[in-house]
Amino acid sequence: MPAISPTRTRHLLKKIAGLRVLVVGDVMLDHYIWGDATRISPEAPVPVVKRERETDTAGGAANVAANAASLGATVELVGAIGRDANGARLLKHLASHRIRFDPRLLQDGATITKTRVVVRNQQLCRIDAEDAPACYRALLAADGAFGLLRRKIAKCHGVILSDYAKGVLTTGLMARITEVARRHGRFVSLDPKPSGGNESAGLDLITPNYKEALEMADLKPGADGVDDALISRRIWEQCHPRNLVVTLGADGMLLSREGVPGRRIPTAAREVFDVSGAGDTVIAALTLALVAGADIETAAHFANAAAGVVVGKIGTATVTPDELIAYVSNPS
Image (tube, rainbow, N blue to C red; front, side, top):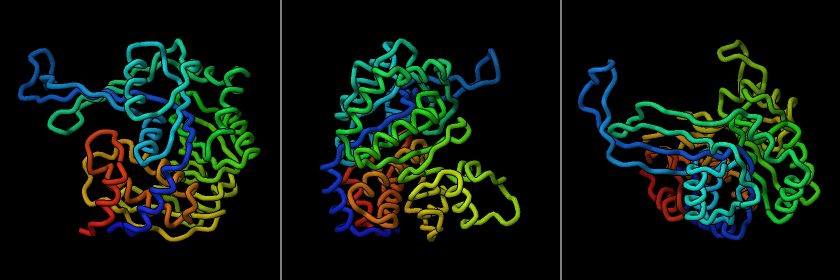
């Protein structure tokens, strides 16, 4: 059952509506092919899918931006979008969600695209199309591009870094963004991808899943003596995040502040159809709630409820204020 009241939820949503957020990271187009499969191909032992329709949605950092915008914030997105057909489709989708994207940041590389084939609401396979990380890393490497980013940071209330290890974010870039944000008193959060090798320091919020948290803490799954306190302390020693929220899937969330573990809060999900993009929802909702003045536990319950709505949908999805209020208002 969601542990945040409808009144508190409405109060936070009202404050979120006045916020400006900048999302920086690995932008993707999520493309879906929907169909049915009733026979096996005579060419190989694989199903033949009869395509019924195709849809597009935002993925990666673009989905973080879509979730923040859906909750009512004013959002600008910075990431690598190519001057290609998939880039045009993604830009159209962003515009439909009133997410700003500066055309001066368009690049010549391919727009990262994940195509999922879905049969009877079950994902059959995924096809990825992308360039090498070096292509996307070049986006903000030039002084002119970073100068543009610096001005955008100054105009927002908070910055969300969304790392999918595709190349846009680097250790150096995140340090420069954090330095500028601190100079202007801006909140900075990170959804990390430790396997990409990036390191961070002194952020306001980090939201790894459990596997990523173990990687950040240099711990192995199943090792003796691994508990919430050890994970929290190790991550604090490594990168000193003010707030740490470890997403635990069906087991909810682990909260920690400045290396001291708080309690675990149970999941708010009532039914789960698809966990794709749930982490994007969590960091968007957590960041907005914290910037709006909520304490970490209230913000976590707010984000937990938002994720509970999203995982009840199929595909990468967002949650609206009306959906969220209805969700926390109905305890069943």
